[in-house]
Length: 410
Image 1: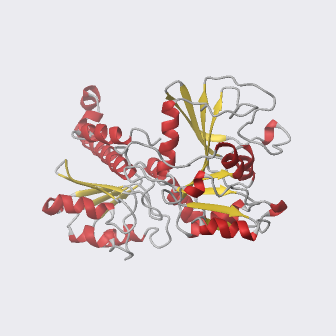
Image 2: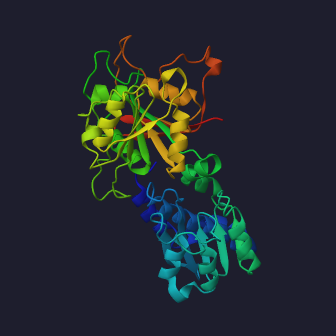
Image 3: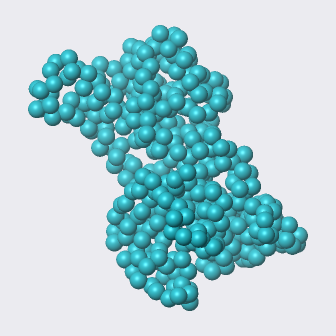
């Protein structure tokens, strides 16, 4: 979860001031001097990479279409430079860390969460910067899946005589950059399906209600998710029922600093009122409505005059083609979409095989009612054997509520 990233960064920085602290006194005495050197080295690699990963997370949701990257420069067992990639077009993490280290970088080790690039884009190759600084060793968490990199950075450094180790905290690094990895492999954004529900699986009362189901801590986490995703998506039913803003409402001191995602409404017949807050508030946050050829031309013109972008994506049965919509977003460089729809949109995204992660915020309430809405509509599988399973399930307490999060099995 994104909550607590700043605290994680501070705690990691304190913990890594002496890597030997990661080994107990008894362990240091029992494994012998040579093994101790090896173990302390491994502990230092892990600790420093943890710090680099925490740095990378400080820019969550800000770097698209680029990845999240953090870097740490270590000389004589001490951190002399730290950096992270803040946003596309700005210096990469390695360059920022090397600038802070200055002359102390010569002969040092750099820990970086993603393979350094070896090509010139909006910035120069990071391999050039590392070689010019006289770095002796580079520890890389994971190779870059982008075809313009994909091993070339590591090969360049090794060819120049730099020691390069790959794979330290690779699993954690892949999770940090799950949005980027999905986009580079498929061209599609990473899709997170999120809902808030009662303990009996209801996302609202049968007659409708303006009362939030979850408490303040869970609602803050929902805004943190908006803050770190490139777009938030709902169906027209949600707009008609709730007239939501779909903005990020976090305090100014939140990490990362608050910003609004692109707001997307799936509306096959363009029933969204021009008076809806997602339309009237386009000066605060951009809005895109995905519709079909069934939408009246006059309604499309009215939305465009109001500053709303309208995308026509015809799908089967007169519905919006969600895959075509995501492909269009991917071509724009959006790496992530947070789906906050009702049962219809949620089920459509799941049935189309577009969902990567599910987050359920569960409140200790019992709503009941045969007609009360649930998170997933649609036909569903013929039996329980056809149910979709989640892997790497994580559970967290958010005040009185629970957050259950897991990735869908392929």
